[in-house]
Amino acid sequence: QPSHLHKQLLKARPRPKSFRPPKIPIKKKSKGDKDTIYSNKWETYFDERHRIKLPPGKYDNPKEIESRFFTVYTKNHDYKKIDNDTILVLLHGGGLSSMSWALCAKQLSNIGVGPMVAIDFRDHGSSFTDIHISRDILSQDVVDVLVSMYPSNHVHFVVVGHSLGGSVAVKVSSILQNEVNVMKSKGTVVLDVVEGTAMASLPYMMDILAGKPQQFETIEDAIDWSVQSGQLQQAMAARVSIPDQLKVHPKHDHLFVWRTNLVYSQQYWKGWYEHLSKEFLQVGGPKLLLLAGTDRLDKELTIAQMQGKFKLQIVYGVGHYMQEDDPKAIANALVSFLKHFRLLTIKENT
Image 1: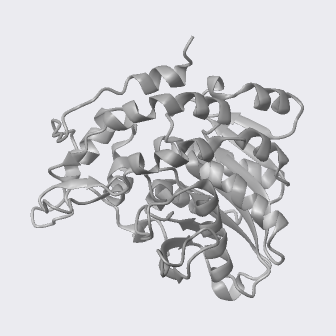
Image 2: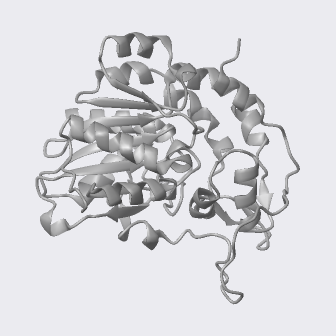
């Protein structure tokens, strides 16, 4: 019997390669403003954007890659006062970017959380490196970025990840706890990814990707599709995150295509989630698993949760992109977890 998640996945049906849906009612700005329908201005949600250049990583072939380029966004972040502080690291899902965390980061900041760091994975968002995105490669990238940002600071992290980013977060926390001397992960939060459900869904992944339009005439069309297809529940979230997931077609500059082609990463899909439950339970420090439904919990985690090995919270009324569907609820859940285990100082806003 397919779970609720499987039923959602099976809804994906192939559409024409180019898709132009009817417009959803979105209030436009002034007539002369080109940015009339979307608001992906990163400055609205983050304080700074950093471009970080690194040499080839542990798993890279230096003959193929001369450098790695990453884009990092920070919030409530002061390098002069960061020593001995704890930083919230926000990692996005496959095919997304740090802008999928934008609304939630703003909510967290309003509550008094800080500092925060959001990192675009390689071949995602505004980071430009090759398309090899195995879990080991992505995790090592994140660790290397953090080490480069805080070379002499004794800092700690709470690593938070959504979907593929959740799997990477577990790996990053493990590396920080076992291989990095100065910096440590104090806690790990995973959003809506469980090994059992993810592995069972892999046979449907090609159908899901085939069900997405491959190109759009305008960015507005992509925003419309993301809401009308049910991928995102909120038009505002779509305006913020979808533009960063697109790029101009390499051969037809009047069209837009997806920034990250996940079909090319098929060889890595199994490795993204295999052994995730075991590794999640083994990683040190407090752990929180946020799910959009109880049917997502597999047997191994169900038993472990009953034994109190991690904190579980079900967030109702959201889809898979939970931090975009209800950023306030996710921010409140994170703050409750951080406060309970005293992982991060919350500066109460008055």
